[in-house]
Length: 231
Image 1 (cartoon, rainbow, N blue to C red):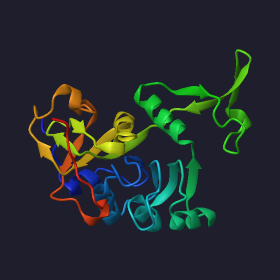
Image 2: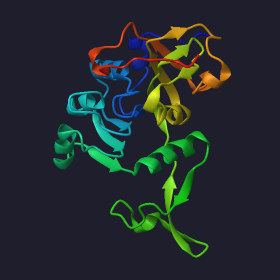
Image 3: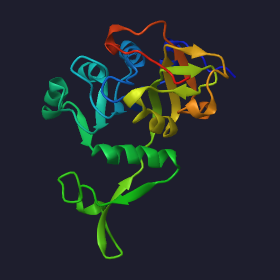
């Protein structure tokens, strides 16, 4: 069954108050067109899960600056003064996790588990006493799995069934998020018929994807971003 959707209808399925994972690692893999449509439609009280906050007035930062985001779960915001200012002024809640921990929290949810133990960050200010557990003579932090209602993903290439191919560092978080969200919306500038990829080329199988939006072109938000697939 074809999973093609228009940009407007795909984003219209997201209600205010939703928890949304946003793929990308800096610019690469960030679904700017999906984000911009979310900005246009104006859903509010959102919780975003993303590796970073993009740059000021760019990507998810636009949603935050427009007052649509209640909470950001991330690894850092240090490259975005606008988001730092809003965080310091109490206009947005930010939860920080080390990058590997954030990825594992998402992966754990996608694998159907509820959490894991780690010794990373147990002496840091982001760890509370209630998070700690003693096991086999050592102290560990309990990290809970992290799920979302929606995931917004950018794929370099896709087919009508939702099989996805990513490029470069976009593969860092996008495959994990596609497994850890209840509804996965994908944008791609290159959409074709099933059978265009060999099995080993597919990074995310179509079973995890609900909607695919074909982009007519890559807007200026993406910068210089050329997609290539292994042949």
